[in-house]
Amino acid sequence: MSFSRHLTASCIACILLLFQLFLPPKAHAGGVVVCDNCANPRQAAIGSGAGMTIVVDFAHLKLYGFEVEYDREFKRYRAITTSIPAPVTDAFHRIMALAEGRIQPSSHALKRAGGSGAVVPIHPDNPGVTNGLTFPEGFKGINAYDIVMSATTRTQFEQQLGAAFSGASTGSPVWNSLATTLSSLGLSMISRLFGVDSATYVITWRDGSKSVFVIEADSVNRAKYKSGESRDASGNRILDAAASHEESGADFSGWYDFTDEQSLQNWLDAARLYGVPVDVGNGVANQVICRWDGKTLRCELPR
Image 1 (cartoon, rainbow, N blue to C red):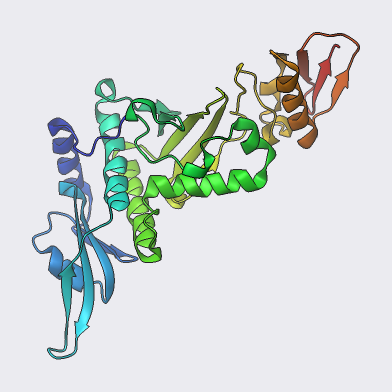
Image 2 (cartoon, rainbow, N blue to C red; image 1 turned 120 degrees about the vertical axis):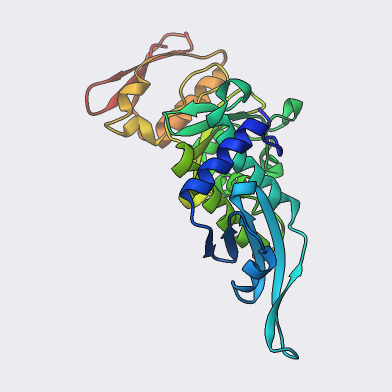
């Protein structure tokens, strides 16, 4: 899947029509000014007050960057054109591409998730340049167990993936703040008009294990880990907080098969961390059976 920076003509036509019908012509939020069908972006920026400002024309999929300052000699504000960092513009087009996936599902790799979000498969090495975002560099070598077993690693990755999605990775606190505001506004607009209210990233790590993270409009700068969806390289569910929850514990019932002792040990470590009891027998098979009794998940290792 690749988030194109240039939406198809028919998609643009649909977006133009919907934005023109349902959105107010001008709005302002945290250094980001929404000015659809904007005749004078510079004047729109001046109205926002001093500081770095992004004027966004959702109807025409355009961004304008300005630094607004007060001219003491002429006693008025003026807006000086400035370049918008690439991560910010990339994030804008990425979010607008979610609408394309909704309008033309047959021509876009995005899939619907639960009728409300887009599912995006990604990989640390970005094969075929299909990720659509820059994968957090310091996390390419981890796996699903690292995410499950370490709250610190999980939180750091949530923040880094959210920053990559929202464009808040410019190195400038000011631009990062503007990127977050712009992305939140954009995803809110797409949700209202097309029903796409989130982006679900399904990560296949280098070892073949999988983790799932969800980004929503109210927290675009942080991807939230989705409990109960992690799997090891063999497809076994990895136990996490969902295994002890009444609404999801039953999903972990069934047989688990492991190809080697280390894979089994990793799974047992996760079970121990999340308080799932495992009875160990005297056999040699690398298999586990788990049962849900309505309140508790109990597992047995017939060794």
